[in-house]
Amino acid sequence: MSAFTPKLFVISGPSGAGKGTLVARVRDLHPNLGLTVSATTREPRPGEVDGVNYHFLSEEDFRHRIDADEFIEWANVHGHMYGTPASEVKKNLDAGNSLIIEIDVQGAFQVKERFPEAVLIFIMPPSLEVLAERLRNRGTETEESLSLRLANASHEIELSDRYDDVVVNDDLDDATAELLNVIQQHERN
Ligand SMILES: Nc1ncnc2c1ncn2[C@@H]1O[C@H](COP(=O)(O)OP(=O)(O)OP(=O)(O)O)[C@@H](O)[C@H]1O
Ligand SMILES: Nc1nc2c(ncn2[C@@H]2O[C@H](COP(=O)(O)O)[C@@H](O)[C@H]2O)c(=O)[nH]1
Image 1 (tube, protein in one colour):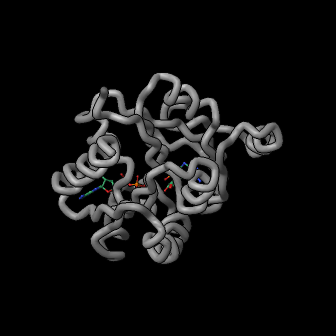
Image 2 (tube, rainbow, N blue to C red; image 1 turned 90 degrees about the vertical axis):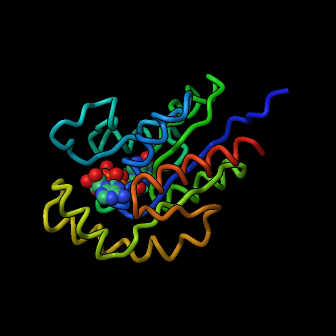
């Protein structure tokens, strides 16, 4: 009998908390950990590739897909629409792998409704000051987008007590090890 049970992990946290960075590092260390590619109506950033980072859609196309029930969840996040295609989840679960869905708090609670066995993990920044510094240094946001993302952060952090696990992303190596440990603990249960 296998000691490994594939699980659905939902990872959330404020923009700039380090979700993408940690997920990439954990996936380097954990074989066969799938990751869904979300759809979004925001513009691609330099270097982002359609179908790899996101499925970049027009708002009209996104709304058609909502009507066709193609998303397991979707939400308006920081002024744009984002959603998880059901096909992405099926593809990964059919392969018998655990799966990470990296989405905002609204989406996380929708997934939990639909898949009660999903494990919700919140990535917490060490402080709002550090969060602002990291997001600013990433250099991807306009001043307007930066302000909106930071304004939303406090509310998102308030909801972290509804998550199964919280990982504080202060030192990157420590946070990577902790996230990997949390995932593997759940897979053993
Ligand atoms: N522990 C850390 N120490 C220092 N810098 C970090 C740490 N973790 C992440 N960063 C940096 O902070 C920035 C934000 O990280 P990242 O893009 O992974 O955040 P995110 O939560 O995925 O954001 P978004 O939700 O906007 O996609 C990046 O430039 C990343 O390199
Ligand atoms: N509800 C959903 N939220 C999503 C999804 N994909 C990403 N996100 C969230 O959007 C913000 C901003 O992402 P960015 O790439 O523009 O920086 C990010 O913090 C995620 O939480 C999704 O499919 N559904």
